Length: 387
Ligand SMILES: *Cc1c(COP(=O)(O)O)cnc(C)c1O
Image (cartoon, rainbow, N blue to C red; front, side, top):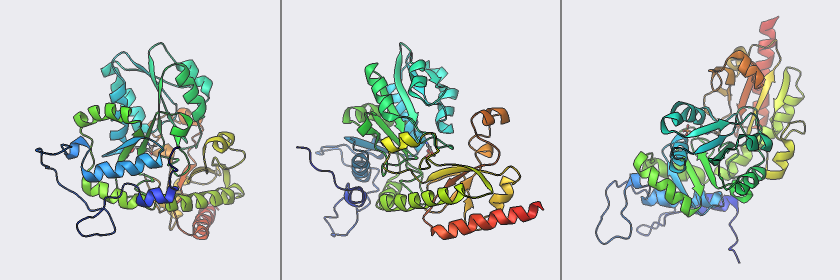
């Protein structure tokens, strides 16, 4: 019988700890060596081989969190994504890529894949039929990201894995927005799970890192590309990431609680036109959320009323920070029209439902009432400025 998996907070706290046999300290020691013995050792260790003690042990925590056999840690989310794609996709292969994926991933594909003779098709939508339509004879991989940014649309993971398996295609997912706290793609048959650990794994807006979790055989393939591309993470940061990940479960749940309450608060607000949060009944992906997530996450977006100036609103916020990134313990807001989707034309943005007044909100762990108060006072301030 399979051994019962520890609970998520126990995995966060304990799995992959390095025992301090020398001094019996409570936390993992940090091993910063970039030079290890090569004689009479089982493993030849080197940071760019992704096998220093801190790298090797933190990978066990990430594998356990994602219900996967093995994992690897990278210097950024994009290092994890680029290394994984290039490890499996060869000249002549085709990859089906979900519409609405992270901009960096889209840039990697659009700017470079032609040079490697790797074919790609971005889907027209997020339904399984859109993925099926994009398949070709030489399709090797389907690449998805759910929830997607910024409207939190979801892709049916089980549907994707079924479609892929029946066509002998592998699947990869960017699981950054959901986190393993509420979504484990491996349980739905997805082969490779990728994270920007810069986001929820790090959680304090002070680490840039990435991770991949999958089978040992896939990790071996990814490793053979990774050691050549060289996107490893410094052991100092690996150690800091381990420290951060101990609180991943409690942080994420606190952030998610705030997001859910705020989604309800904003839904009833006269100055808000629309709220996009998978936990709301009217969200187009609500049913999929119920089927594949254990919660609705801590990211949401909302449209301010047309007469409100979005920049003025953000400037009027006193505690919530306008900020590029997401998932930290502090709440942040961003204008997709000026950042992630700035390169699209206004018409393209409109067709994707990304208006100039769309605010993406990353819920932090602050007291919920203070977040509501901050948003309320900012809305009042911009309303006054308008009269
Ligand atoms: C931030 C992000 C990435 C890229 O990660 P980096 O750590 O910045 O390289 C990839 N996917 C998603 C969904 C992200 O939010």
